[in-house]
Image (cartoon, rainbow, N blue to C red; front, side, top):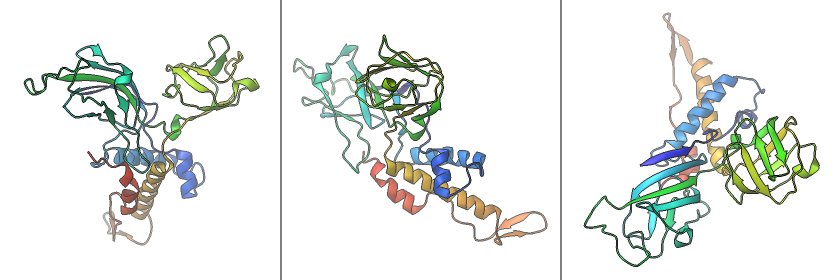
Length: 291
């Protein structure tokens, strides 16, 4: 069972600005249409039967029945941090398992590795996996997914810097779901020392504690930019190409000599085939599940 502990700020795999640039449109041309196509294309990719991944950075709680193998496979990826692993309320030390890294060009990794296997207690005793099928329940709290293009905060006026806590605060409660160790780029503060590339120490929806900079007090009001996306460029590119295809298909349906008046309305001739273009499917192949 998968429960969302904290939802993503966005699930869109690209932005309006990126699509407009790719399609060479004026900035406000067909904005409502394109915004809708971005949401639709993102959904088609996420829910494709060979992908089935949110991709958006999200905090989850998942309960699983383990097996006697060394890999515990979670539902979402890539897994970027694990808050806790419990077996019947007993916590496992983080040193007892490792995250399997995602290899370049491969599907986002969703597995935790444990050398002694997930059916063996730290004492060496074997859990009653075979005698009680379905009873070996693990609870894993983890964060998975990428920070998407719209997780970048552009020209916001709700961020302030706090010297005492060495943190940034967002009165809007929309701090991206960064994890400890990540390094966003902040710019736009009047006080120069508040700009730069700090290292995240901790994060809540309204506070981002950092190290690596010596922050000075500065009230909100300036137009602050926070750059933090981790979504691979090739994945965003496939979403843009799918939006392009859907947009051109829509134009094909509405204009041109292939639309004929039958007296009682219009009829489409030689309509372009619906669905995901083969080139987009090929580009998405590295993100398709292997298990």
